[in-house]
Image 1 (cartoon, rainbow, N blue to C red):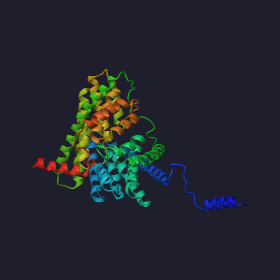
Image 2: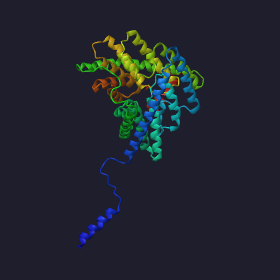
Image 3: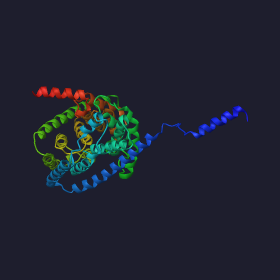
Image 4: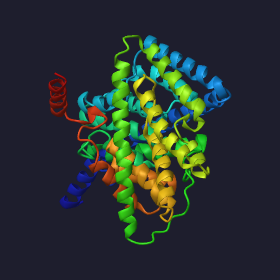
Length: 436
């Protein structure tokens, strides 16, 4: 055998003895981790939703004046759970931990969050299950990351991916849920943690599939809006105009929430007393206006289908804002995304009575987008979510409305932890100076 052939043979044998390290695909071990997290998120979300539906059906039997003691008792019980097990926090705490606590969400708060939020949402509080699901699935991502000894941005990305899987499961919008989990973390920079985009998308897709198999929810638009056909470019102008009106209502909601927050802060009592008071107030509102009860998932369709008077729509709009504010500030647990969409629907129907020639779908969607973008500072994900949830196929008018709500929002965000630490210190200093 010639020397040249011998050298080639030796080279081939050396290659075979070494482990194969070349991977021609982007697919990697981390993909499997994101997929597992998405599967867990879908299972958790599906189980939570099934329990929530059964509990809601049971508590819905208490109607009429019974709704007042029912919601008062559920509020008291939720407060006792929080008092004994621990305060799970709110969306402010989730955002704060992702940004300033190295992306770590503590799983020990999950039992308190799950139990208290189930009672609050099922009994008829004006908060939805999106925040509890985001908390639980996000902390599951942190737990999974610690098992695999992830640190830094990898751990933070896994927590964000967990949040996205929970949000996607409920809304049935993988892209919208992924963007929301990124946008809500900062009030200026939409994708500050851009490294988490792909993990969030992968986890969201797997979560969506599992959740859809378990509860068959999210397989199409869930709110029945009339079909929309764009008449002219002036529809963009109408979208901006309606969004400006909706942003004003968003400001009203923020000021109303701050008012009740100050009011409840003056009550120097354990949290279960505050949740009891909140339950009584919510029960009274639900007694006189039953459509304001619950977070709006099914009630939005009832609102659209109903032939309601102007006076009734005004009452629904005003007292729904009050109900959300009371629910948020009295210690009840849940998320305010869908309740804000309900408020936007009521406002859109009210505006449509003044401008009946304009498409009802355009009016409602513009109001929904602007209110949510004003409060949560999430214009991109709001646009995609509403397109998915309503079947409104024209993205551009929704985007115009979302951006209008975003740029006309208060300078200080409703979710205070969306600001940088420096901005937070400066804001607190200004507030102290003004109070003095």
